[in-house]
Amino acid sequence: MKFVDEAFIDIAAGDGGNGCVSFRHEKYKEFGGPNGGDGGRGGHVWAVADPNLNTLVDYRFSRRHEAGRGEHGMGSDMFGAMGNDIVLKMPVGTIITDAETGEVLYELLQPGEKIMIAKGGDGGFGNMRFKSSINRAPRQKTPGWPGEKKNLKLELKVLADVGLLGMPNAGKSTLIAAVSNARPKIADYPFTTLHPNLGVVRVGPEQSFVVADVPGLIEGAAEGAGLGHQFLRHLQRTRLLLHVVDIAPFDEGVDPVAQAKAIVAELKKYDPALHEKPRWLVLNKLDMVPQEERAARVKDFVKRFRYKGPVFEISALTREGCEPLIKAIWQHIHALQVAQHAPVEVDPRFASDDNAPS
Image (cartoon, rainbow, N blue to C red; front, side, top):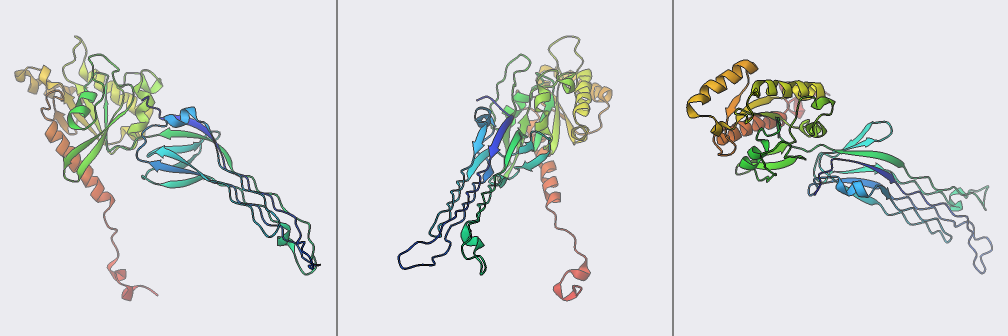
């Protein structure tokens, strides 16, 4: 299925039903009085985060979505029925933006999260609402209120803990296939990956994290060159970036250090906040480097790249070095999770209700 991470839709909540002007007419009831009911409320439009969806492809072909209109009020004190609500299922991580102003309206970040994105109009009042001691036979009524109508842009940013970053053919797809349950397309030519892939890495019982692989970047990506710039948004919610580098490029004269520096420069151009995320260096394809040359080549790369963070030497093809990398990632993510959910420190003077200020 084609990966679609952007779509435009038009939504319309239901209009409220009109109020009714009616009077009670029964035999032997000379002064029946008004009995016109109110109109029904229009249907709402809801958005629900569905964990079973991973693209917005359904909204690429179905753009218009309308809720039901409320029924009009009727005589005999009968109110109109409410219009039917509609529920739009969207992937977790969807950002809902006003297509005209660009304002971000809602974000669906939790599975099952439900948000009203368009409110149905209220029903109008029937003439029974206007009865008073000085107006015994009112003929007033009000029309129903119109429902909200919006033009929206849907944008999906996948929710992953770790993002893979690198040039085409750096071995990102091989790495995600080696450590997770993802099975991306792998081939010996550039731009094999055409859309993001997500994989769950299981470290142990109840210990896992999600990895996102996006199409490779090339120099000029921030200006639109290549494919990767279209999917860099999916790395903005990650906790950690893995900069995967081909330490043994197939083409002669290709400098891995120059390629790595180009990736970092493009990342900074695209989003400075993304550039500031924790980023680890993963030197891949060690199986293609003779054993006696590995240490010297890695040392030379790190020195010329001027990198001072964690460095991992792996071969995604043979899984050499993958286990230490997985364990280090889990420890880093787990530490962030613990820090995020750490209890707030309370002043001991106010720790109990007895000492609370009155």
